[in-house]
Amino acid sequence: MIKIEKKIAVGILGATGSVGQKFIQLLSAHPWFEINELVASDRSAGKKYNEAVNWVQDTALPPAIADKTVLDSKASLKSRILFSALDAGIAETIEKQLAAKGHIVISNARNHRFHPQVPLLIPEVNPDHLQAIFTQHFGDGHIITNPNCSTTGLVLALKPLHQRFGVRKVQVVTMQALSGAGFPGVSSLQIMDNIIPHIKNEEAKMETEPLKLLGSWNGQEFVHASMLISASCNRVPVIDGHLESVSVELEKSAGADELIAAWEEFKALPQSLQLPSAPRQVIHYFTEPDFPQPRLHRNLEGGMAVSVGRLRPCPILDYKFHVLSHNTIRGAAGGAILNAELLLAQLGEKLGLL
Ligand SMILES: NC(=O)C1=CN([C@@H]2O[C@H](COP(=O)(O)OP(=O)(O)OC[C@H]3O[C@@H](n4cnc5c(N)ncnc54)[C@H](OP(=O)(O)O)[C@@H]3O)[C@@H](O)[C@H]2O)C=CC1
Ligand SMILES: N[C@@H](CC(=O)OP(=O)(O)O)C(=O)O
Image: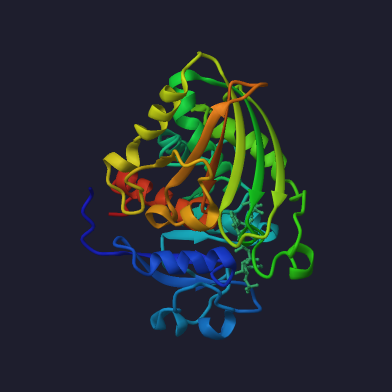
């Protein structure tokens, strides 16, 4: 584990939103980072954070944060590392402007995920893609993104299978939590006693983002994996935790016990580097016939572990199973914090952050 002598000051863009609040909750007790600056829109700028925010987290707003004055994105920010939870409608321009000023923007927003020099990163899946930042031309700064929240759980479950057996085809049906739609998000009259079989643009993201994540960086460009994915996305009345029903076709034939072993033995760079947010066991495989469930398993290892269960033969493809992950922790703020930890551990000295 790297030793941090003095905590590194960071800023949060979109600090008043639903993901921004999750950043505050997770960073408030972080061993390496200290929240220095909070940025939101003109509606919030100039107010104390507790006056600007509708705090909906299940832990109290830390007093030191409550009292901070919210800044707007044009303010001159001192923190080199900025976590972005900006609304995607404005993230593209603001993130580029801040990178041009020398900031390292670690973003949740979808805008730069397919930029040819921007890593779309899950530290357990494609840590080597981080090197792409040295080919970026955003001025003195950099942009790093994390995937869509449903993609994150899916790809973490696919990675151990892909590296041992090769994954050729994937069919996935999601049951996505309400917090994925932000706050206030979907209205209660729409979702009570109901399931909404549509989430705008979600299926296209799930069918493309895994190809970049499971592909390679050759020093100049990203080479995408060549698997075929079909996704169907649904919003369900669950607060946190995206559950997905997945079928896969493999390149090499393998027994069910070999797939379970691939998940249970899966360890990657964040575990060997002992990054503070890395789960000890990345994938928890459950043998109970009715697991994993959002309410029971979304908070495993601080919401950073992924739960898999119900592995069985698929009459159309080879196998089917369920995967569950916490959408606003592993799929959003926690995933971005793990990206920043990897950046610091791998490139902190080179970037002058340590
Ligand atoms: N919710 C989730 O599970 C996931 C969300 N994401 C992505 O993360 C981002 C944030 O999502 P979420 O928290 O749900 O969104 P919210 O709508 O809850 O929050 C948006 C934030 O952006 C700020 N903002 C809006 N316009 C501006 C502006 N012009 N300048 C500066 N700040 C501005 C808002 O500030 P103000 O309060 O002042 O209006 C607010 O802090 C989105 O891009 C989303 O797609 C990614 C993965 C999962
Ligand atoms: N679309 C996701 C949340 C989200 O904001 O995704 P993205 O970061 O890809 O825009 C959900 O509804 O659960």
